[in-house]
Image 1 (tube, each protein chain N blue to C red):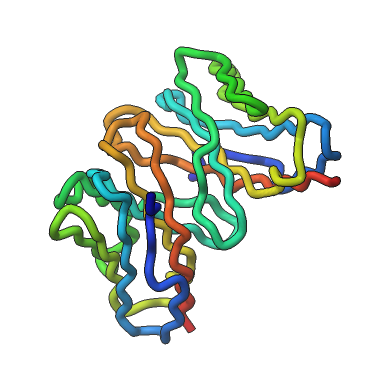
Image 2 (cartoon, each protein chain N blue to C red):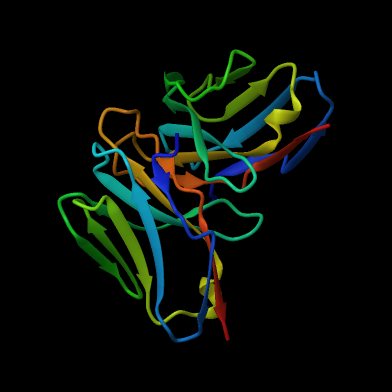
Length: 115
Length: 113
């Protein structure tokens, strides 16, 4: 079956621009997570959805970052007024339910480069 | 503040020998631990996990050991194969935190044929 997919795979933008990153989770998975991985680091949690609602957005670095999941499936991570420090790989993961021991399945990521 | 640490950024092992990857954590509330494996240009894939009520979990060539008193876990791969060459991330979680994982910085394993 299809895994988690993310588009685009690469995004190059200029400082100050707005970007949207898309995640298609595994069909039927109710929980969806966004992580950010900077060079030489492990993935860092940004936000997690249970269904349509953001259950925990404590990892979002500031109010330039926002994510939605309007129909409980596809999610979009939105970054306003991008800065060079936003350059990273943005990873999306989904799990069947939002239990602590539920395996999170990751997509390949979107590599964002802010010039 | 890095709550999960992998102090060895890289490791090289001969094919057929044992690979031991280490991970330390600081938060005593962590009670579930995982290892993920990542190939270039792909997302991390789940490898093996362990709950804090156990001290060992085995799955084929992969065994994870947990030492709660030392806040340390390790992943043993035996025998190592060239296809095991990847970056390995240790991750941890604790209850009532929205199921977010806290990841280490990764260890790049190279298995030499």
